[in-house]
Structures are given as C-alpha cells and as structure tokens.
Image (cartoon, rainbow, N blue to C red):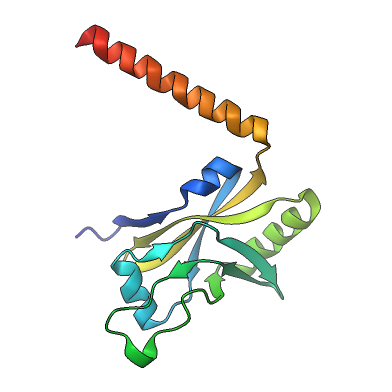
Length: 154
C-alpha cells in the first residue's frame, strides 16, 4: 500500500445537487475506535450533514456512522456531533466568510489519507430551483451527446 494513498469511503452526492461548491478544505475528524472501524467498513452517511462553527471550533452535525457490529458497550451515538480538526486561522477565516456572505459549510466526502480519516468540507452557496433544473438539463444533454457519439462510432 502506497504511503500517500487516498482511499475514498463516502460521498455526499446531495451536496453537489443542492449547492455550488466555491472552495474545498481538508479536515481531520475526532473519532472513537468503534467509529473508525465502522467507517472502514463503509457504514457512514453524509446525506443531511452540515458543519457549524462554535467557540472557535468546527463541528460536523447530522453525519450518521452506524454502530460497529462487535462494539457492544463502546459504541457511541450514531448521530452525535463530531469535532473537526483544522488550523485556528482556517476556522476563523471560514467563520468570517460564512457570517458575512451567508454561505454554508457542507461535508462533501470522507476518505482515508495515510491511514487517517479525513473530511472534505466545502464552502457552499445554495442553488435555486432553476439552477438545479439547468444542471439536470445540461447533464441530460451531455448524456444524449455521449450516447449519439457511441452509436455513430460503434
């Protein structure tokens, strides 16, 4: 196994559907042993999760990590609020940006980097309904073009 290998675990597909991602940040995540074992098995859901900044610290809310099968009494609440690990200067800059411009911090993906769980946090702006329709239409058009090219060359 390569030392700098990145192994993806979970993606938040709903985030790219509902938001424009302006910037992305990498953060560590504070977990317990049974939670990390559960993540290694891929039992994590980012669907309705978001990040909040409170007291100079950043937290992820709504991230569901299923209880570990062999965890017994050591299992934690699957929906508990978890602390993210970022530099203080990054957190302060994000806090100012979120407060001024009304943006949201959304976890985009969870992956392992050098054996440690990392969260990719996006600074996001909400999409309006017409933006979602336009994105779906362009995706359909690209799919139709791809299909036509395949039939023509096939």
